Picture 1 (tube, rainbow, N blue to C red):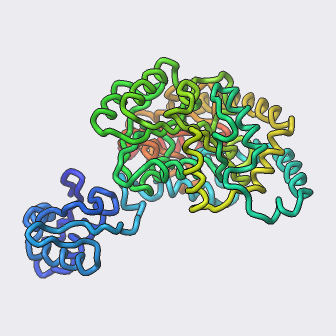
Picture 2 (cartoon, one colour):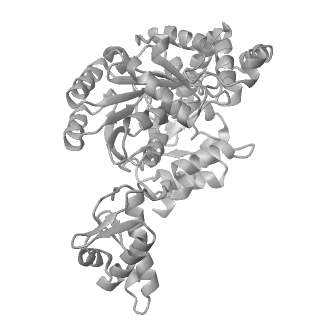
Length: 479
């Protein structure tokens, strides 16, 4: 049974079964420490109180605490109680956050999509198929790199990243109203690494971070790895719910907010200027830093507001990469931040990655300077527009309804027919070699169980409709 957030093992009350009861108490303490519910230096529950919570005897708790003492996980203060040791317990991401069926949690969805065998259909993944990517432009760029000086092919590189690419990024960012000089930009191996470096720079374990609900599911996983508290703010078609955003700021005093503001993942929504203004005003008052993930910028048909543009890179940091539009194999992203942050971020990058990735950066630079890249993007946007309409039409015939009609991008955020659980649909699809992305993997509050994200560039296989129909009919039959 579950009492609040505590999972209680009723089998621990069986007589003559002391060892499992002690292990159960020890496991609960370890889980709380791993999840940061008990931070280093925090006081453990009293022996009597915890015995009542766990439905065991006080002697069982005493023995469990003694064993944790022997392992160095906790320490005692005579006359005061027991406290978490200063050193952190090993991190287990599987122990942190809401419990999901392993078959459809974010890590399993990602592993299936990344490691899946040939013939796997991937409407739940977050990238376009190889046939949609600019293969010839990448091959030309790689031939250019192959003719480079030996140092380019063999030596370490500046951790800031290739200067010509930073200059090009500076010009590209200005097209979206974000004015970042090359010295305000640091290249990274990916958008994920960019957020990781910023989290290392900005956050201490136990601090609070706001995310959209729903949001890109890897934000959850990355933040849990940094041992912080995650609070979701409901997302609307024009951005975060400003009333609930303000309430979260007041109640939790978060250090950071991570969001997309151009094309939102997973909903496809676009931030409105009014919402952007209100969010920035509240962030300024609360001392909140914002990381704006702009990875889908090149898919836009009409330029959306950027928080970083309104803010002038004062309180807002923008990150991005080329994994979705150019190549996921050529790993290259960036951070555009206040100039005063670049030096400490560079130190962290040296400590964790040591060098820049000059080979990948040079390939990206050559591909972006190739006039074919812009033509590729225009063709992809037209192809996505057609795919969004066709996919939405096919889904509606199954009773699956888009939350909004996105202006651009690769995602449709859809509600399933009434009473149908997305996780059950995903389990059925997995048995048919189809990887889906059920809504709760995007939701910190676990309130999106009837939603699903579809990547329209991966939805053209007729088998998808067959599998979805079978799953929905099966769910109805058993309900």
